[in-house]
Image (cartoon, rainbow, N blue to C red; front, side):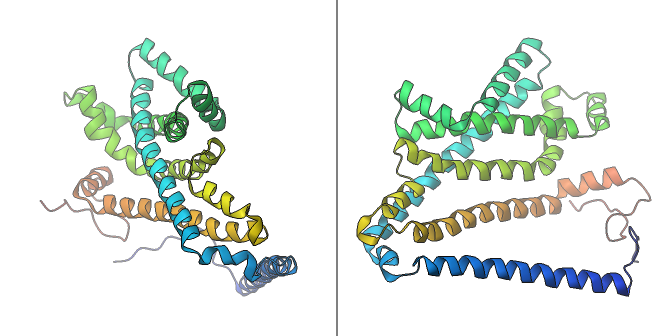
Length: 292
């Protein structure tokens, strides 16, 4: 059995022709913009062999690979520590003890308001910490504070009845959080978490300002080489797609996790419980209990 729901009026022939015209005009504008950018690149000799020659040498390739590895290492450390710090601060923000809640709020608001670059420079210069730990510490303090608010808002967004029902069953607060609220909140928080991790990945490029040899630092060394006529634009055209690809990979991973969560037995059980008897799940199928 299939069910159809009309949420808007079906467009008529005139509207469809108008939409097709908009699509053609938008495509023409985008193609024109791309052609204009390519013309400027060719006009400024950005595709000459001299500027692209550095990428043929093994030493340059190893420099880029080493910088990419350092970027991924810094991001991995900052991501894990940010998630851990965010979880701790979120627990503090949700605490029933007023002092703990105020302290956690003070920490979150302070590090959220501080610019990331200022924190990295302060740790690197004032505290005399090495480049990698200074970069990771700055990214962790900022992104952990932002993730703490994401976690807190995600838990508070779960329907209040879920919390009350769990307490009515005699569960302790830690059990309610671990088994009822957090599993449901994670699905809603996942896009925001991945978005913040993408921010952390891009912010690893700030490491070149404190001489950390990450990906952008390697590109800067190549772009400032006078022997190859300062190949700044070619370096950008090589580095940018790699950054974009890493961010897209994170987004794909988030989508994969979300789809896996939707297929899990726990998720199906929650969907059946929330649907209630006689309700129809997406696709018009009646809810059925998950198989053991």
